[in-house]
Length: 330
Ligand code: 5GP
Ligand code: MN
Image 1: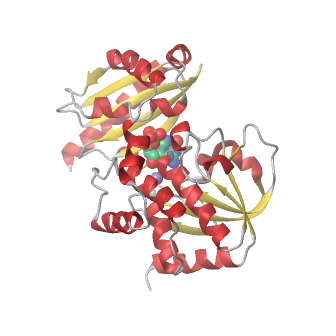
Image 2: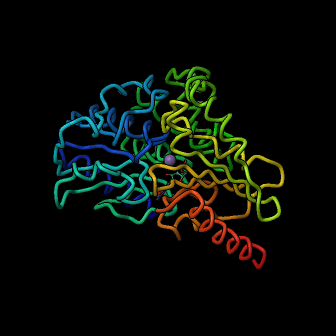
Image 3: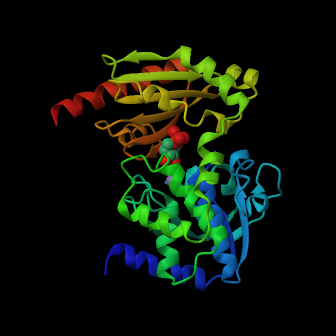
């Protein structure tokens, strides 16, 4: 029996043996985090369980069309409710849940469902498959293993996770298994054009305003192999951009011909910078991020640096120089 099959069975017991669940995902949730959280909610309710779904902040506007999204609590506005049984979706480490950690009772039982190679197995039960394109893929396999039907509500949430984490079924994580799942989700009545229109095509006006400020900040280094851009606190304030409006900006740098690594430095506070890293085919950016206390995937990762944007740039340029040197040797 494979390790993953053993994990599937442990996860099934975890769900069957408990009645009341807190389901959470990571700070600044993306389509996979939100889709998985909601799909987990639908799955648990289908089994007659009590469920509380919570995000650290508001659910991004572009995912509010997902069935059940309006039921997700915003931890920044709700009173803390302590829970003994917790499920985390799409979180590589416990710190990724942010302030929602306050909702975890001491010694709580925790089911960790994820697909990040940097996942550190922090759960009581860990359902983690790093080859999976999305947590939504892991969750779909889990539902299949439990021999449960997939409702249209669950399907649209899972489809959104697959669609966003594969960049619209374009990244190298788009396997035949992913396409097989997508096909079976569509057969429940999910409308792919509508989902793509909402989560991939539509941009907000603040996003556009931010883009016009961010593009001129582009800098190339390592002989044109690294392209970095920066967003300051004032850029966010003056354009009225929300956190979700910075998603995807990093790809403009990464997509320039000859560039191997794209970086976005996003100032979160006077002395705090969120760094997003994307690579094309050689550099393992998850290793770079991990060495700075973050994590992620080989081609998409992130970390937070305590310091100014200039300090973050210095730290990253040193790390990337080392990463390129390693790449040249191997
Ligand atoms: P993004 O740059 O879009 O925020 O994140 C890219 C990928 O890296 C996502 O899979 C995300 O979950 C992961 N990631 C981003 N920041 C962090 C971090 O601080 N810690 C960990 N463990 N993963 C991160
Ligand atoms: Mn994911």
